[in-house]
Amino acid sequence: MSPRARALGAAGLCLLIAVVAGLAVDSRLDRHWILRGLTALLAVCCAALLATDQTRRLRQIVTGVGLGMFGLIIPVSQTAWSKPPEIDFALQVATDAKNAAQKNARSAVSVADVQAAAEARGGAVGTLPTEKNPQARGADAYPLVIRAKRDQGRPWACLSFTHGLDAKVRAC
Image (cartoon, rainbow, N blue to C red; front, top):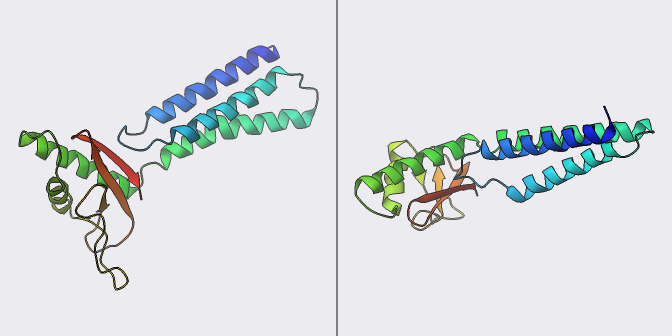
């Protein structure tokens, strides 16, 4: 197979993996598109190295490792790490709060909807008050801090609603 055909095939495969991994994540999550784009660009650069003359063994090894890292390992690991348990909990709370708002024929999700949904699932809204910070943060305005367990301070996720019913969840 010619070096150009290998390079084109490797670049196409890397771009396909990057797009599929990006779309595999829930749309309400921050998908790190900038990091994903840079990773795909580096994978394409490694594929371009395949098109050049591969006379040295070291260049072949570097190209292979680069394709493996930037074309497969990093996109797949970013996808796997994008939904830890606290993010899954926040996504479930967002779905429940949106359903409650729609059931009551409202065009926006209120903080009370989110609080009720979190409490119904055994969690809480806002940071856990401590001696250092006696005031709970993220409990009365967006972005809300969502805790999966009522009595556990961390880990938590931040939840906000844009345009009324569109949830955005991110680590905070």
